[in-house]
Image 1 (spheres, rainbow, N blue to C red):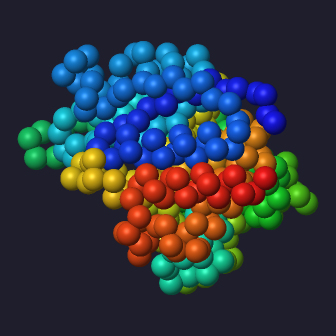
Image 2: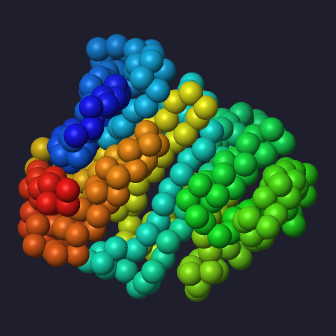
Amino acid sequence: MNWLSYAVTLIPGDGIGPELAAAARQVLEATSIGFEWDVQVAGEATIASEGTPLPDRVIESIRANGVAIKGPITTPIGSGFRSVNVGLRQALELYANVRPARTMQGVETRYEDVDLIIVRENTEDLYAGIEHRVGPDAAESIKIITRAASQRIARYAFEYAVNNGRRKVTAVHKANIMKLSDGLFLESCQQVAAGYAGRVEFEDRIVDNMCMQLVQKPELYDVLVLPNLYGDIVSDLAAGLVGGLGVAPGANIGEKAAVFEPVHGSAPKYAGLNKANPTALILSGALMLRHLGETDAADAVETAVRGVIAEGTTVTYDLGGSAGTREFGEAVAARIGTLG
């Protein structure tokens, strides 16, 4: 029996988020790890009542607890409020975005044995949000790359490789064209890699070539480390290799806090229908357990998810079944109980 209890901020999210969060919560509690859930509402629901999709109380809760798990939150395209995800990353200095991509039996895909870790720098590059109009018919965005942030994310990637028995880190860039900005990112990765020589292999790839390589032969790659924009794009490509965003967990890690979340949207048209697949949020919960040092519980969650999906009898419609969000969560939770 594990007597530890963790205070965790739980942000249900918008659309299908609350249903997914309920399923993930049930699965996490089935591990017998103790949780004290600090439920914090954010997103569209708080705009009318509090004037913002990201109230200060949410950030303060995460700062106090050090860890959060959140459902998807709606981000309008082209207008409306800025991404809550970006706001959380910047406010909490969540500098490392970690996206595993691993094939699962029972999830339809053209590939077998894909096992990738995408490590994305989360705080700068074009996503720093420094942009302005240049006259009425042009706009300019400024790309920021610093040595400090580049070395920090490279070090995170190499430490992840060492701690998880990974063999290789590949730095992804466009330094052949953006010789100063991406050149600095590549140089920073090379400098960090020198400290891991003999322990972790290092190589680099130009980002467009990397996309082709992943489609043709993903088995050649292991841990990828990328600046913010390329990381955003390549992590979705990697998710596509293993079945899509519905099975893709995510983590945002900082020195003092971490937020775990699926990377798919809030799908408001499916809200309340008990149809959405909670796999990505459940697996994000497994990443959270691993972050907390609860390795056995994390393994149990991942094994249970993979087992239920491989069996195929209690899976959601996108996986070829007829089970609802709630029923899938119940099946995974029950399977955890058989693993002990």
